[in-house]
Image (cartoon, rainbow, N blue to C red):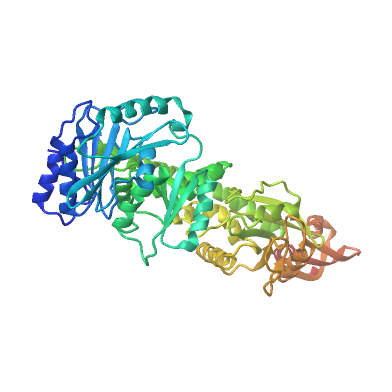
Amino acid sequence: MEKVNGNTTGLSQTLLEQIQTLYAYKLGRAAFATPELLVDMARFTQACKREISVLIARDGTVRDVSIGHFNRVSMPQLRTMRSLSRLCGIRCIHTHPSASGRLSDVDLGTLRQARFDAMAAVGVRDGMPTDLYAAFLTGTEPDVRIAGPMDPARIPSELLMQAIFQADQAVGRFEAFAPQQGPEKCVLVGLDAQTMPELAELARTAGAEVVRVEVQERPVPDKAYYVGSGKAQELAMVRGDTGAGMFIFDDELSALQVRNLENIIDAKIIDRTTLILDIFAMRAQSREGKLQVELAQLQYRLPRLVGEGLALSRLGGGIGTRGPGESKIETDRRRIRRRIYELRSEIEQIGKQRETRRARRNASGTPTLALVGYTNAGKSTLLNALSGADALAENKLFATLDPLTRRMEVDGREMLLTDTVGFVQKLPHDLVEAFRSTLEEAIHADLLLHVVDASHPEREKQMQVVEEVLGMLGAGDTPRLTVMNKMDVAASSFVPKGAVGISARTGQGLEMLREAIAQALAHTMQEGTLFIPYARGDLAALARQAGQVLSETYEQTGTRMHVRLPKAAWNRIVGQLPTQTL
């Protein structure tokens, strides 16, 4: 006989066997429910002090018996009708212990989400059914029709079954009840309320519609469910209440956590890392960017190919699934490992090409600046303002993913300015590793411009996140200049000591920024006099190109030049001149 599902913890085997007898009921096609069924459900509810639900197909057979928890009932996703535009062909009847059968918002939400034929509740007092309510979808506004209270001893089955068939026809004709179109509805789940606004912004950037935010304050995640098992059961009810098909968790989940949550909530489960990788996949435009995102995705996915689960769509191991199922997983592992090797090799080759270009720039003595900062701090807007570039600049997270280098001038001196990918809290480790070759632009820069959104309430924490990521990259000691951006909309005009307040959008403070850049780069300059023989006109040309010629006189055998040059260019020229010419 089928087993009893739901929260059976603490119930005796004898009681479970008694509840299991509900599967034996055969109602027939014309019966919505029978008084005998409702009496037995009420009796068992009194015995276990929990809700009991039965799912009944249109042929009158009981397809599922479940036990709830704290007046919540977890209902599995069942469907007997082939057409997705119709109802699912299953009606749910459940009990309300020591309460009226009046339907709650959660009950009605589950009706909408599961597209049940009907949702019925039976009030129970002293082990007996007291009243019955039933709700049906209408296909129009209002979208739910409720019948009740009704006497459990005299159930108007003919009228209730007629309401089911009317609802089935009506729902199939109205687009509002067609399979979901447009943005996916999602529920956000986390352990820290302070990080949830950013997770919501990430979800919206990925194209999802946030319908609810659930926070369970706890010091560390639960190893099996991330949240507690009771909270996971509650999330299953949130799914029915909100109609959400996706739950996004604020931390990286293990394969075990994903599988357990899918089993309870019966919805798509993704974590913060998966969400960020998805956004990066949307934003990547260059060949290198696409390769880096694919590498990060595969590195994240490989250890999570453990078997069953909606996210991985694989058979689980064990009795009944040996052979092809396990072989398929192992085949996928080998393919992923091979692809990871290919991607790393190709990215390494691109990295070498980038290193060669960087070496050429260093040889020319042209100073390099890198824009770093939290995502959506305004780095691309600042790049456009300083260099006249036309880089994409939008009020979105990770609007710019691929690095972009442009020329700019400061105090008559040519420089190279590079826009790098923005950082975010809990930036996935795999992503940092995959994008290391790109982020090396920040490591090798002469000066980092740390762009901060001065209008953001969490700017201090964002600055700390950027410093942590720079430390991970090995750029913790690179000279930097803090740039407080968006001062035109900031609540306070305060600018920390050593920082520059600007508005890249309006141009406010850009001249001050250029002066600050010139001062910050002063330590990279060397001033002195060089005597360059006429035979080495290439070195004279390099001096004019790389820096400033303060004075110049022509003598019998060569040119004497008083110059201010980047130290790299100075050392290159001096290294090629005879000692007696200096």
